[in-house]
Structures are given as C-alpha cells and as structure tokens.
Image 1: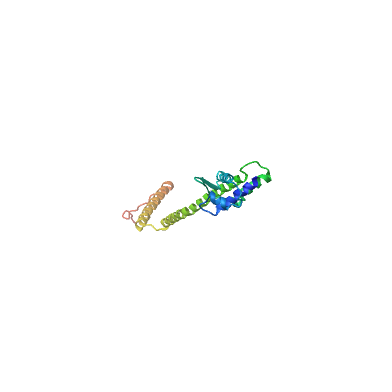
Image 2 (image 1 turned 90 degrees about the vertical axis):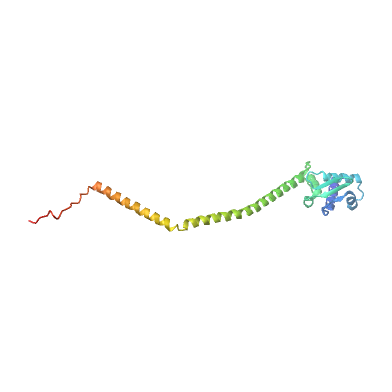
Length: 198
C-alpha cells in the first residue's frame, strides 16, 4: 500500500467515526470500510498511526479490542483535507517534514484558543464595566449635590457676622494707618462758656 492509499484509508476511518460521538471499535470499522481486503494487522497499524498522531485528531483506546474515538478536532482536520491533504502537501512541495500541515493546524488551534480567551475576557470586561460605571456615576452625582446644596442657615449667618466683624476691623486699621501717615490734626474743642463777646 503506497502513501496516498494509506492516507485515504486513514481519512475514510476518520470519516466513519466522525458521526459517532462514542467512537467505534475495531470490528465495526473493519466491517464498514470500503477496502475489505485489508488485513487485521494492517488496519491495527492504521489505527495506531491515527491514535499516536501528535495533533490529537482521534483517541485510540486499546483494551480487549481497539476502540477509536473522535475529538473536537476530527471534523476540522477532515475539512482541511485530512491525511490526504498532508500527503499531497508533502509530495507537491517535496518537503520531508512530518508535521507540515499538522503544524499549520496546531497554529490555527492556538489562535482559536487565544480568540476564545479574548472573548471570555471581553465578556468579563462588559460585566464589570456596568457596576463600576454606576458606582462612579453615583459618586459624581453625590459630589455635585454637595457642591450645589445650600448650607445650613445657622452656619451662613455665623459666617456673615464674622465676615462683617472682620471687615469693620479692617476699615478701622485702614483709617488708623491713614491718620498716622497723613498726620491728621486733632479736632479743636471749643468751650462755649469761655467765649466772650467784645
């Protein structure tokens, strides 16, 4: 069996299990594949290759029999042309690397996980923004109320009387200063009894 036939058989096996949430066992897979001439050992080798793939496209459980189960990446891998696509990629580009398309697939997986985390973060930002915004809005309204609110009459009257007393003291100091600087003559007091007519 050449490389292309092996890749097509692996894709066929993945297509068979992609519709089965609990996977399929060895006998079911052997009965449902198109190539009935394949030996049990050859089919087991194909299942082991799929299960041992580092991209975790499917899970192989080995117990009394082989059991292959799909993962969340199985359908996406098949959409990206699966093992046949990897084989054709290697042949067309003459690249000897084993993980050519698998690395690109893993990079897409990492990007999807990153996008999922960013989506979760954005949701939390929306959830936490509303309470913080409301708290800030209430604080701003309370501050505005305290600024605009008239103070108590008693406090205002005490303030006004204190202001008037300070203003009168200031006026007294100003007049005293002017008297000192100008040298204002003292008022002459005339006693009317001492005045005589001539």
